[in-house]
Image (cartoon, rainbow, N blue to C red; front, side, top):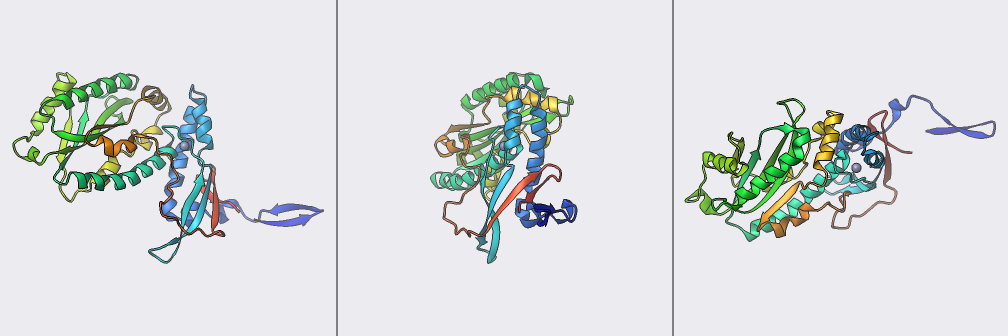
Length: 323
Ligand SMILES: [Zn+2]
């Protein structure tokens, strides 16, 4: 933007529509493109909360990440520079799409540090990836349904034949298609098992279903899935995948009533649970990360002139460079 002096006052010259000449964060840093999508979804969630009993969440999300302060830092691999977030304000509302995304990045970073320690301590261990489901429930019954599923999981874990030496269990809720507007709660569990699981202590899929059905105390066959991880499977990647979110963004933003009820139903419920020997290694994953910025441990050389500020502009659905 440039300025001209007229009649003693200074006015900006707006030479062309702002759409034509703005520099956006996504243009300047393709790596930071996801910001636009997540902040746009945050606008939707902010509107959903407005005028509800959660209007305070709406206010907080409205202030979340409106301004982003980036620095230029050397990009060691390519010998040039890249943008790195140096400060922003986060609302930390549980279902804020921006904060949920930042949290998942921090958890992923933690997973990268934790997993090698676990593998070093239990080099012979093998891993199973288990998904446990129950029948879809009305969104208004979600809290009770999760309560009984958690009870059922405790029963399962108490069985003599339960093979896990340690596990991490996360709860995910998706919008159920049948009936429309219902909720589909399910557990993802990474289990560490002894090598003998693949010998004398092996459990067939049918045996797993029977164990889960008895634990759930239902008369139908619940859908569940058990996969053995192969050595080449990335445990970190899988862990990052299951701790990513409890409700995906497309489900958060699909329907206001469903979303408000989800907020009521999930209030003060836990998304991550740890079992047995993994507890000490992974308890950090249960806690809200302090740092949603993502500072590197090693000091980075910051270039003082290299500060760039971006502001969220609802109208363009983009973060725009401020001059
Ligand atoms: Zn937020």
